Image (cartoon, rainbow, N blue to C red; front, side, top):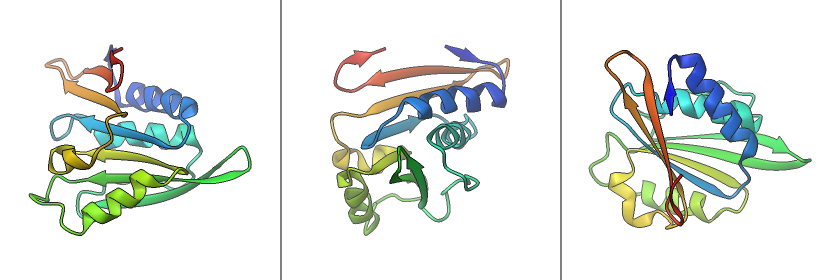
Length: 145
């Protein structure tokens, strides 16, 4: 699938977010500037998160609350780009992954690959020469979609 603008990427994420139910784990793969955080903004919008979404590059994680069907949930967004070793963040991630009321989104997951559940959605974002983005979604339990 090709998306041609930032607005397309947000719209795609919003539609995905509207379909997601907790618990869920999403692994985002893509080069710097490919749109991983932009996609997360769309997913958050679809979930009903009211706060602005910013990159967790320097803080490693950001936590957001949202309500759906009169229940409180969490969206936790991680970015392990700057960490060669997850250290204490591994405990934080493990807690997020085990919480049945949390959707966890992880950028640069190579550092924590051994902590990720087998059942997760992987989204690969590739930036094309014309500025568009190619999206590939892989359900780790069922293969490519």
